[in-house]
Length: 166
Image (cartoon, rainbow, N blue to C red; front, top):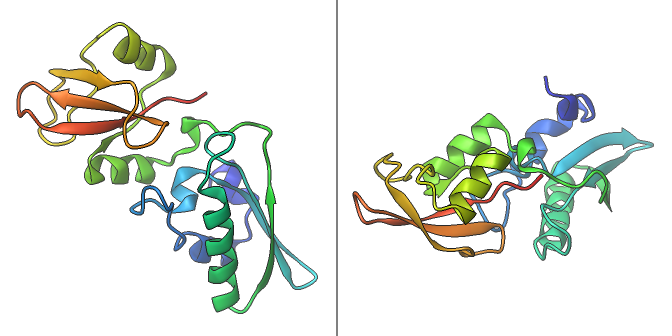
């Protein structure tokens, strides 16, 4: 059990695992590490969430989706946005990293490797189609600000890379 799961009442985990990230629907908000805690106090589920980056437009949708999922399960809820500590890609679960790869988004590398790939042209981001590391940066920004666009020089397929945020 992770330290985050220790802050979430067991009966709430399965409900929150059904809430998808609106920008990457194959990931739950639990796999993204967005949920910081969830407890039941006086019949109300109090959920703390942290945005993946300051000003993330998906947080309102995530909050609404959490409220709906909890309401459907018979709970009243309150959502609190927690900004400290800041979210980090370290909070993406192993299951979430695999789901990213299966969906066609390369999971984040460690901070130093991320900088080497994004700024020094090192070919270390693995293609999500053929697993080759013969890949190159096409654009610092992909479909969202937290992703970069890469292309594989072996299979020629483009793909997103989820940037490391620490």
